[in-house]
Length: 218
Image (cartoon, rainbow, N blue to C red; front, side, top):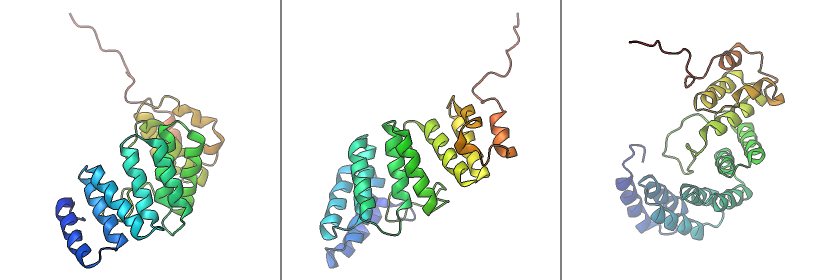
């Protein structure tokens, strides 16, 4: 899995499964391998087998949500994420971010912000890139990245993390989020708004805007 040889990983895990057919962690890992290969139907099959082996597997429940998310069935994804969170556990931050992504895609931005805030309260590094060899699938893409980045910037700003707030505000700006200047009067940015990094983002023109007209040549 760490080498991203997912086909080989699925086969290796299935050898283990021959000895431990009710091992929910192995069933979940096989599901992840197939999901990484883009074989969502097989992934769903193994996640459901994992839940039959262990009805309290919030990993498998979350991962079922990510399958529905990839199918753009965001309402179903939200239901799975909520079920996964209700199961409890000590690795809830990625599930909260997944829930936030799903809310973004149905334009429920207040709910998305609430989810991101809860994720960051548990793990301030939750949005940093990680490997793919874990047991829980976490989203890294959305149909509206500009809005997503702005909401993440707001969440970091509320924590007083100016560096990350500026980074995600810049990503929002550069991705075409046209209301990024709203940060100047947004109370969620109050703790970081005077920071030079945030001010630099606010006072630079977006790269997609023409900075000067091209000279006319004959």
